Each structure stands twice: as structure tokens, then as C-alpha cells.
Image (cartoon, rainbow, N blue to C red; front, side, top):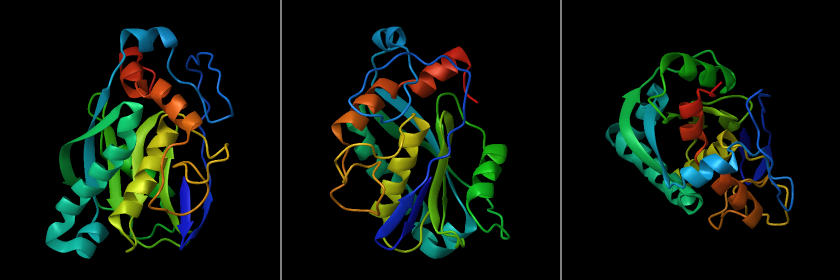
Length: 223
């Protein structure tokens, strides 16, 4: 989960404990949770293409008008370029509409609503985009091993939305918040910076976990 207010940000992660097999993995620092056995990675080296269902709500459409779908595509394209060094590519399969809860104070119930209403197709990902206003200022939410993510836009830039999406997809693939000395890592605990990149340790783990949704789909492990 990512919370952004202006240039100051506090990052929180919601981790769901799973009984799924977790292979051993050695990293320089604690960057997250290994999700994919080395033997499976050897047999399935990637790159891994994720079919993305993009769901835009009424606030996103009202905010962006006729360009709503085009701007949603732009967010996905930027996030895809951020993830490509890890062997993950995002491919939009469809753009659909969804109705976010008018009485929600945070995006947490939005994530649950998206999970209930928009099914995942194969080894894909559901990205829900909203421009709603929520009291806590949380701008992104996803859970480890679960292929749904909500991103909130509030007027700064599509690049910032793509940064939030990249960060949350990192959580889906087992990455924890920043645990190294690189303050410009995508998983760092600060607001958007145009020079964001992957630190070496997070990139190493993401490359190892990049096939998780395919692996989980094969092994029926998704929560």
C-alpha cells in the first residue's frame, strides 16, 4: 500500500500469510518474500506477459473525459516500461468500467469490491483506476500473491500514477518496502520522483518472482 501526500510519503504494506510453498532465497538485504521455486524458474525462464484488465471508475472518467481510456493506457505503458527490466511485461486485454463506492472513506473497500466484481483472466492482472477523494490519502493498494490493484489519481501526473502502480505490483510479487541505501528505489518510502528505478536487491528478487502469477496459475496457489 502506498500513501502519498505532496512530496512526503509514508509507505505501508499489507502482507497476507500463506501456506504456499516458499523456496529458499539469499539476498543482500531483506527485500521481500521469495515466491517461485528455482526449479520452476529454470523450466520457465520468461519473460512473463501479464494480460491486464483495466477498470476505470466514474471519477476517473469524469476527471479525464473523452481521453479516459487513452490516459489509462498511458499509465499501464509507463508501468510496463518500469517492470520490463525484471522480465515482466504488461499487455492490456480490455478496458472496462466499474462503479466505486460513493461512501468509501479509504480505497481499502474499493480493492475488495474490485476483487469481487472483476475476475482475473488466466495469469492476468486487474488494475482499477480511480480519481476519487479519500480521507487517508492512500494512493495505491495491493496484496501479496493477489492479482488485483487499485491506484488513485488526484491530479498530479500520469507518471506518478504509474509509479504507484509499479510499487503496488512489486508488492503483488512479494517485495517489501525499501530495505537498502537507494532512496530512489521504486519500493522506497517517499513520494514520486522522476528518477525512480529499481535498486539491485529489489530487482534481483523481482526477477526471481516475476513468473509468480503463471506459477500460481499452474499450481492453483492464488489466494
